[in-house]
Image (cartoon, rainbow, N blue to C red; front, side):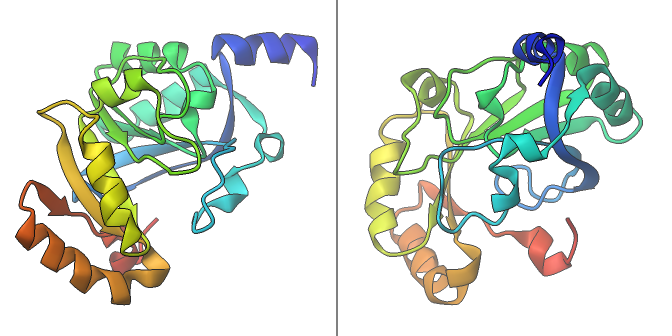
Length: 209
């Protein structure tokens, strides 16, 4: 990689863009809202059930000028969701500053494993056992979304819920490949512990990105 490109990436003026698309938010608190998704490549959290493993290697995704990403986003929705991969591996200051200067609402979906950069209207924290969030991300989270693959994840979810703020929205979401087994258990759990809500990957049921 050229030194100039490395410098621009360090400043957040270029980012390893995997894909960008306009769709309906399918998960969590903002389910059903139109949103423009910006998926940034690169992730070392390594969830075995990840459904976008092709995002892990940042070198597969070309460094793209952040100004171009912003210009394209402006022509779609009034809400932008930055996701990955793990977007906080990169400096989000420049991207979010320019998105917000265009009067866009800016959301992020993150594991919280890296320092929080950027300014966001909504932070969805989805913690992973093998690389836990940093304390600063727990405190800033507006939404905690725990993926439930097996019954042991309920205990993990409760541990994580103790670390976020009192106003944080709490969601349990069945892992897609194991949804038939875990969804009934999540229903029972939420009915017994009503501080939680259920999140489903509705975009997959709708057959949209």
